[in-house]
Amino acid sequence: MTWNIVSDSSCDMRAAQFSSGAAAFEAIPLCLRVGEKEYWDTEELNTQELLAAMATEKTASSTACPAPAAFARAFEKADRSICFTISANLSGTYNAACLGREMVLEEHPEKKICVIDSKSTAGAMILLIRRAKALIEADPDMDFEAFCDALRMYQASLRTVFTLENFDNLIKNGRMRPLVGTLLHSLGIHVIADATPQGTIHVSDKARGEVKTYKRMAQLMGESKDCTGAEVIISHCNNLEGAARLKQQILESLPVKSVELVPCRGLCSFYAMDKGLIVGF
Image (cartoon, rainbow, N blue to C red; front, side, top):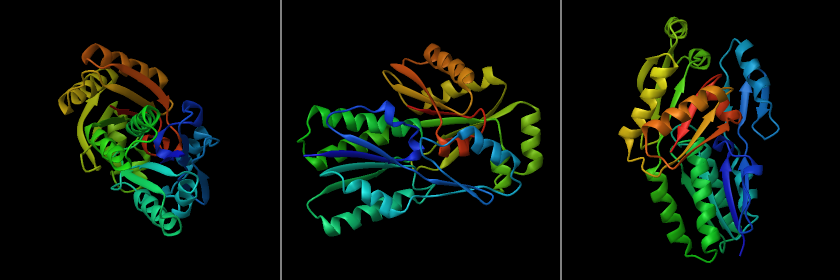
């Protein structure tokens, strides 16, 4: 019996970070459109080039979800597939994956395929992938529905908070007035937001300066759930130093198990922009 763990490229996981004799892993790339140019969010994507192009492009940039056929090709490779996608309230990727599932089951009804909406992105998806890997390695012959139910329960326990200090993308997409964005940036004000249980974005607070921002983020994490023993992943966009300082703040403030730092892939770089930090836990 073969297993395949599938995600879209918003997960911030690279192939080199995944190793298992029980399951394969594949990330399906989204398309990032900047002006007339398309960037596919593969591991070869140069995120510095992407961000530079976005900074000089005067029109709004956009993203496009993968085609259902891309997911179908991944699902065809294994007897059992589990797939995690970016929040369905942020992208059509979840629907594309579900369509890909139906395409495969029409031809191969014996296959087992489960698609789960992460209701998040970045680190939370890495945690889901790792939990799926651990369950498969523990019992490759487990009941498939019980396996999927366990992962749905785990997904419901995960949380995401993030902070932005670059607002160009929000301004160009009409989600923030230019004057407001300029004022926030000039004052050194960081927007702090979280993902709701429904997978939408909720602006929780604003803070001036790094120290206050990171303290407030740790406080928000503790308010959102009991963090005892939690695994934390911080995705950073060109901000390793800031991510390290946030890590220290979290370790000092919360009884978490671990804090890991990973660089954003293309999709999360596109939304977090330069210096953005996304915390999954």
